[in-house]
Length: 111
Image (cartoon, rainbow, N blue to C red; front, side, top):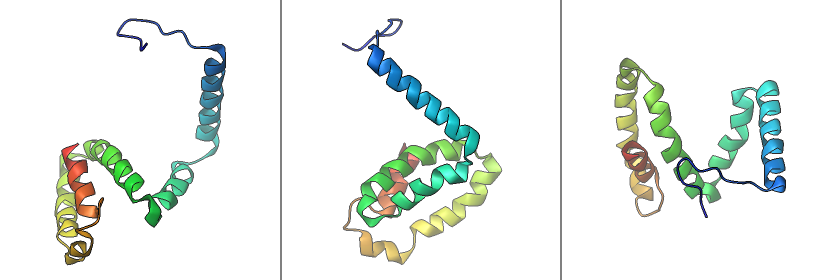
């Protein structure tokens, strides 16, 4: 059963060990790698044609968070280029595919 608010969940020794190992790995990565080095493999994966759904889900999850970090003037500066990108006739070719660029943008904006 899932722990409710204010309840303590008991984790098995094996699960606790896995979580400690994962935390140690992430800490080591953070010390040695730059953000670019961490994101490069993800970028490669997201550009793989067989990973269209993954790319869409990542975009929908990340875009709203990234957009909120921009100032109002930065958002305004990006608004017109983003709008022109969505209006490109090339998107008509993928209108029947799911997910497509326009669907991903709309989902991200609405998230």
